[in-house]
Image (cartoon, rainbow, N blue to C red; front, top):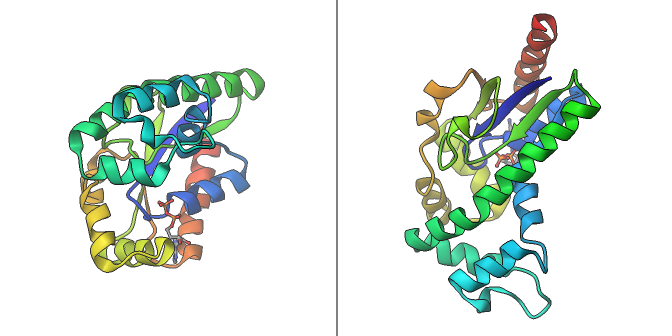
Length: 202
Ligand code: ADP
């Protein structure tokens, strides 16, 4: 089994690249999905968040008020650290379990672990990775795609970009870089080429 970390910046194209790897036969673990699972209604982690950051973050139907939480942590670094300290160990444990499960079921699999905050909040050694793919798009392109996808004003999109480690700073830690500044087809070709390299190298 080969375990590859996939990261990039917000709207740099991680989902596009992950979907292409999945089509090619990779097992994909999506850290954002895992992050949503660990705060499902009734979960202990959700209770911990309410206890630390306020019970008003739980909606009457028992679900997490994601918008209120996002607003809160976006404007308050201390709250963001608290939230990360509560959620990240649980997310990491689930991802490690998923990797182990795939290892038992498909020992020859290529596992892509899509972790937006890898090389940012999450250090590279948090997972047993054989390499890291960074999906890059130049900042202007990233900004335009973010505004379009999430229907944000330029100012809002810039604020979200500014809250992350600049994408260019992740490049030196990459084992492989996929440049998604161009057309989706050009990105797909890079993903296929990388996939073939992995097949022949194993
Ligand atoms: P991420 O998962 O890194 O946040 P996405 O894969 O969702 O980024 O891409 C961000 C947005 O840009 C999406 O709306 C997506 O459809 C669009 N997009 C991604 N890659 C390209 C591309 N090469 N050309 C045009 N649009 C793209």
